[in-house]
Length: 108
Image 1: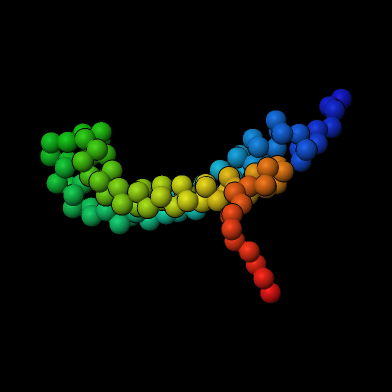
Image 2: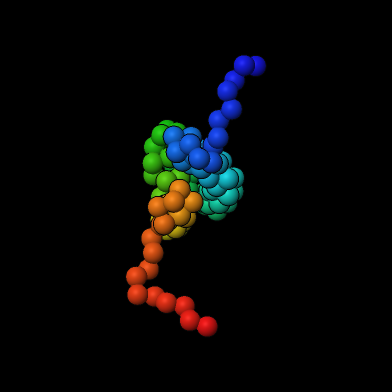
């Protein structure tokens, strides 16, 4: 097709976006399953009670979002922790050394 080869492991302008896209692609399925389970756990009687005076947006704001808030908070906390670890790993791969622990030694 006339394309020039791109070395994705040594080209920094390609390497980091490639890692970000693959990480998002990898974690999307897990997140979807967890959020679908949280949605299935919401009491249906709350939706039936909200039908009388609430539209779809009001149901989402007053029933759905409070029902999945805890799952959302735990998921964001876990994503933050994994993101910090992942950033250190990327730094090591890119040659920055990552976050080294000073003063720690391993003696056998």
